[in-house]
Length: 294
Image 1 (spheres, rainbow, N blue to C red):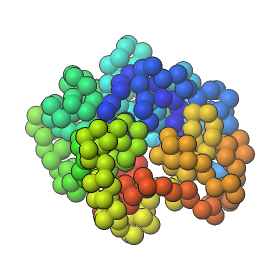
Image 2: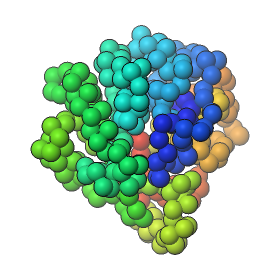
Image 3: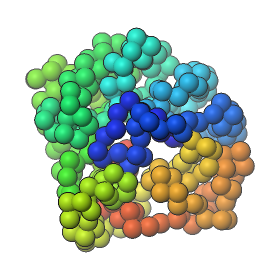
Image 4: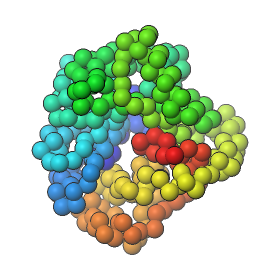
């Protein structure tokens, strides 16, 4: 669920084109329709993203409602929102109280590369936010509070193998900052929105697309996230995945396109809408909301 494109940051790689000036926010009515969908169809996971999803005024109410149900709750947290004000400073405790699995973007384990992608000072703020999450038990053995990190390359290249990156991140963050986490997800940048702008301005578009196409992996394609999810936009429309949502690439007309009329049986047998950007999810080890697929 993309609950809005409002964000306290404006990252260079953001495929949603989120930022402080965006006004799109999911309404209480759409949230309530999503709850009815959860009650009716019993999904295993509800994954909340934005923008900064925590900036939606209905966010905490919705998380509390989900926590009453047998569903895993994932929140895509940009970390710096935790330091934005006293109100957001309570998020670590709120997350822990509702057993939320936190998934946080950290482009690199060094300040220079992180700040280049996300803004000056973001790395230090992210480290402080991670420490606050650790302080309430996130990333610590035996607590059951899961804290996962997300890595995106800072240029027109593929991520290194996910297990290698995880070892490097774990060593650097532990030794340099006393920060712990559970898993690291490596995502391939897709040629859409701000990253597409970068590719065009830098003259890397054709080369990058050739890399994606040449690295096509049918095994990765079999694990693509669009095969097992439904993406709900802030306005209640349904898409095959988060990327199709931001491109406004609609689902096939054989299925209902709004959350109020979602039909799980029809959705499971639909033909998935695809485009050139899909080569990003099917290249090499694959890429999904949960990192590499192979």
